[in-house]
Image (tube, rainbow, N blue to C red):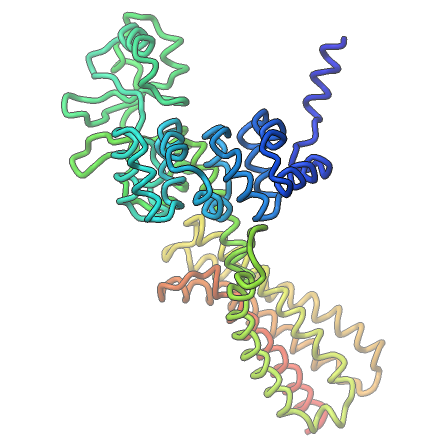
Length: 463
């Protein structure tokens, strides 16, 4: 019974990074430069918890930790850090520690850490690493960021096409130190090291020792090229429900593999990027300075200011109508606001569909028609609702309800089309739809909303 209670307590244990007393103790020890206390507090933490703690303390405290006790921390915490915080503390870590740490990590994690090391320090770090680590890191850094070449790990499990299940099991036991820490498949290769199939570890363990690998292997394989964009790799994994995939060179020879744990990170990263970009925000890390945040967000706010000025100019052209009928000034924000919300809904659907490759040139007409019909249907519903509200709110003049109903219908139709056509157009022009669509869509809905309502009201009521 006590064991069960202890297990339950461990399962509900608060992570150290969420314990304000623990964080205060770490910050205090760093401020006092108390290395023994820092070692007692930090060295027993798991790498993910340790990384979380270093993320949550102020930058100066994080640098002090790296400088005073960094050499005693497990290498596995480095890839768990955000790249921003890792870039900030790496200069404080001893080069010999970082070089040794790269050798202890899987090559994909080692490459991610090495990419954040300052060029001047990198030579010193690689000089402290073993030759295999140095060659693997240099090869990984030769590929562009956010490609499969950076994502893959060079360790993999492979067997010749003539091998049996027993051969593979015996060899893996004998050469356990050469195997990746985690792997899901054994790749079957020909004499030229070209992968021709894969056997899942679960299938291997279920098969008799005399069974040839070619009898139980999965073929053909989906092969990944090292220059493939990581987002495309992630979509391939999702489409074919893969746990791992071999990476091959120009000759088709296996050079490494990508595993699903890295793909989960890619999907999370790309999703966060698209979400932030949709709001015109490129960075939102907790380690960001005020200056960096302002620099990332101000340009899009400037563009928004320009579109708002144009919208205000449109309103100013109807100054006489607004002076004659005050209700126009009260009601016109409703039209623009509802149009903006309708456009945002269509835009969110479009950006997600583009990111997931569902929205292509062949499927675009169907998406455009669906969003246009959806927007017009919603427009008809809310035109009736708003007309009824306006008739009760402003019984005089009686045609005001008709003007706002027509304006809502027009605005919704344009909003739906803008929400789908703007990101499609930007994608065709080579721009990132997630970053720039919202500004242009808001511009369209504001202009159309104000112009439709004020124009129709002037035409129907005041002409």
